[in-house]
Amino acid sequence: MPLQSIRIALRSLRVNKLRSALTMLGIIIGVGAVIAMVAVGAGASARVAEQIQSLGSNLIIVLSGSVTAGGVRIGQGSQLTITEDDSAAIAREIPAVQVSAPSVRGSAQIVFGNLNWATGIQGVTADYFEARDWTVVGGRPIGPEDVDGATKVALLGQTTALNLFGDVDPLGQIIRIKKVPFTVIGLLDHKGQNSWGQDQDDVVLIPISTAKKKVLGKSNSNPRAVGAISVKIRPAEDMSEAESQLRELLRQRHRLQPYQDDDFNVRNLSEILQTQEESSKVMTYLLAAIASVSLLVGGIGIMNIMLVSVTERTREIGLRMAVGARGRDILGQFLIEAVTLSLIGGVVGIAVGLGGAGALSYFAEWRTLVAPEAIGLAFGFAAAVGVFFGFYPARKAARLDPIEALRYE
Image (cartoon, rainbow, N blue to C red):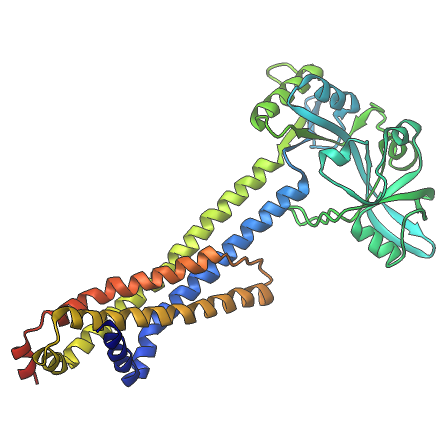
């Protein structure tokens, strides 16, 4: 009998193909919208996670802050207020710190043969690669001996290497930075853009001592000054507590009074990006909730059409009951019709959602990520809508009085 009910239900849907298609339209739009919107939100979350990974795990950046001279506050970063000694003290005195790496930054035109490229120059120590989780895919990294001896060696980022060398292997080649010859000893792994849209691969790394002595120059007020300190915290440690200890240590070293502002800036980049990730998750839920309204509207459409169908087929229902059909047979028939509409709409909606996510990724250049869980959830919700909104019309049909139904005009 259930198989017969399914055949009757499907035959009834085929009789009114246009009405069935229009009824399914709400479910199709709802399921498609849910999948596409969740894909956009998941793509944004994945992008933020990649940015966190590219910066380095458990990373705190210390930057030079503003200083006050003669009652006048000089702009942030205009004077270098942190030093290599500060970096050494951070690594030595804060137990939670895994490694601390000072660095200086500048820009220059790099020349190789008759080619040149303007890029960022960073003077770093051997610990920089561990602090930033940056691996070397070819050659070797900068070692302590390079920093101690101020050797003229360089590592190239992927973008710089591509624009300066193309398909030529850069290892062992001689480049010139501000007319100073450097030997390329390594090629950095791909990092991608950071959260501010800056290409992290457009860079050349050289020993910090070489950068100060031969390329970027030293600070007149303090030859040990640096532009930034990258501090990597051990995985099991509390980032907030480590940040607080770091701030207190630097204030003591810089002899700042309680009423004085910090002359440095501490940025917990992982926390900033994790906050962005939470925001994108909230946006995903919001988009999915808005798209789910379409499913609700589609369910109401199913209920409306099924009620009309019950009214139109009252005599048919009465006739079936007169020849022996029970109430549950009528209930099953109309419930199967409603669920079938929802499931077919759900399948088409999945295709629409996947196509919509692909279109957004291609035309709007938005990162999208379609999760199987989102597809399953949308499809399951579509089936639930069919059962929920189809039950009342089916129940109404099952409760009709056979005699009154046969008399219905």
